[in-house]
Image 1 (cartoon, protein in one colour):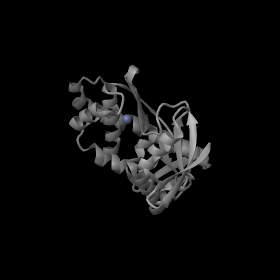
Image 2 (cartoon, protein in one colour; image 1 turned 90 degrees about the vertical axis):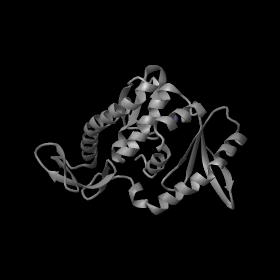
Image 3 (cartoon, protein in one colour; image 1 turned 180 degrees about the vertical axis):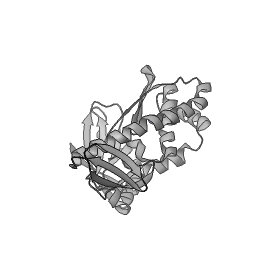
Image 4 (spheres, protein in one colour; image 1 turned 90 degrees about the horizontal axis):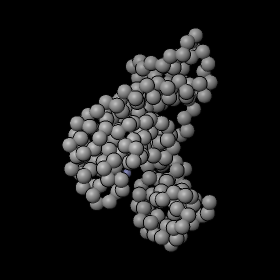
Length: 236
Ligand SMILES: [Zn+2]
């Protein structure tokens, strides 16, 4: 990891550079405002600085967001009273001592019934519950999306759900498979739809070149508003 800077207007923005075997560059703003850039081993530093500089406006915006909504970005502790999202809505966690393990939604609460209220157990129970709902919900959205994309020659992919640290979704073109981040169950359905359509279009056009956006615009014209909305949520 090495430290570098970019200049944006009258601001100097430092970033940490991490080189890896990846093919593309990724810029991340962390909740504390620091910037992390991942780049391929052989990409020249001048080029990296040029690319990061172009993202200056986005970095500033992202930092501002973290300043405005610090609460949501605090690391979750999985204790009673804490706020957790489901399909974009906020619910409070209620941890209830019980002989059995059970999770249910009641009013504005997600109730965790458990003999063991340690945060590790509460997290596992909550995420098992998230997963059960994600499997049904994401499948439904995929079904609906297929009725739209099938006529563009896109076949129903295999869908895998897992917790990912950095991406909301990804796809393996050759295997006709999409991966969705389990964390998506926390965001509003219209943002989940955006991610699913984004990946579906990749099954036809793997990269982000003009042809990709031409097809996405045709199939899913309001994608950029949904994308903006999704960017307000952090992958926790
Ligand atoms: Zn993409």
